[in-house]
Image (cartoon, rainbow, N blue to C red; front, side, top):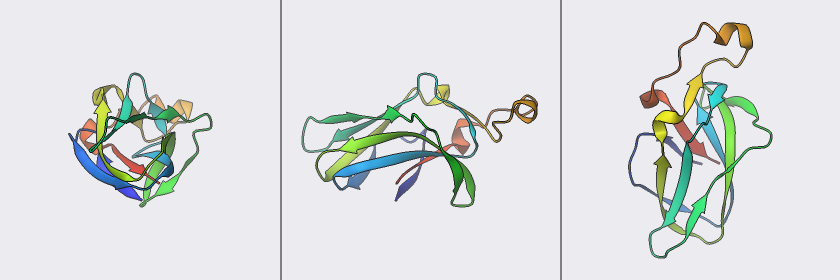
Length: 118
């Protein structure tokens, strides 16, 4: 597990083994990605890995918070990476994804939204 990483953090350095990682958004189940993107840049090379959006966004609880899988990323070789969050304010999260209850909820502040790599 890598994280939790706040979406407003800049140039966060992490170590990843080669493999496929799930990306979970913590805080709520009503997630709108809009223009939000995640990029992993190699520290010692020129490789850049972009995440792909989840076809089946599974919702669950993780670290005692509501979590929704928003995507996956495939890392081809182990090493140190810098995590970049592009357009962090376009990611909008509500606690509930139910139509009637979410109509009366406010979106979470960007400071309260964290991501986890599994």
